[in-house]
Length: 297
Image (cartoon, rainbow, N blue to C red; front, side, top):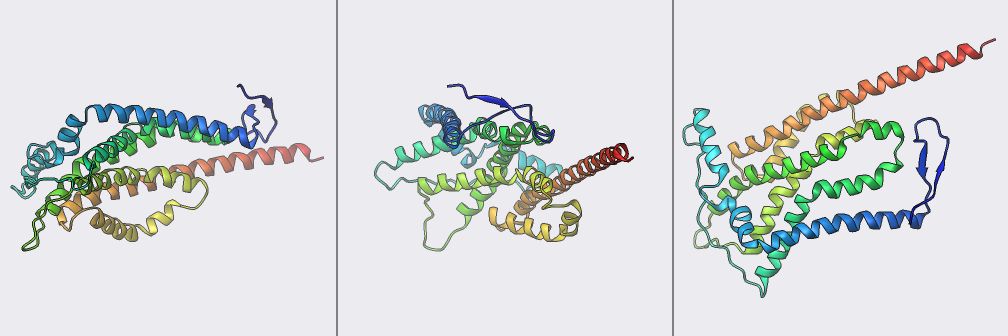
């Protein structure tokens, strides 16, 4: 049912037309956004489940194959950098077991849902933003133009980084680490959980520039402050890289460099926000001075 719309007058920053809705109408609109987002996720989940044989063999178990794209790329990069075979590696061969009753089926459902959610992230974020955007001021809406594309691209880039970079190194280290007298045979469930941990958090970490942008808009972060605490940030990045990856210097370097680049990019984003805010304040001051001059006798 169409909602009533009324014209309202604000301080010039709101749009000319806005939706005036009750609390229950807001909940109803939120419910529709959630239903549409879940519908797309479930559809992609069904597709992944139907082709689960191909998905598991080529996508989920991909980093366990010796001919995986990342292994060939790392080895080629190692030779280009003059490191010889330092970054060349072959994943250890290991079996994955399912110990629970119906575990393969449950894990297939879980993996399909996660893949569907990652693939549908741009649309899911679009639905969330469609609910949030009408409550913004017009100037805020203009400032956040393109945020859906930016956030979606950063998330997918981060997930791809976790899949193609973090996962291969982590699998080689974790499966190569042995204890005498103990045979390392991971369960299917633990393998899937680790693959999710390698990819989804990386996608969220890559949203750092967007998070910093909004923190800068509300004045909680400044470019000068980020420069001042750059050394602390580097230490934090190294700690985070050590948590996300095995204790290997090369791996931590491969993880830490993109994170540091994101930090420097965030400083650039904050600088742009500060410049725009300064220009806006100057314009408001000039407008106020013109008004004062007009009202003077």
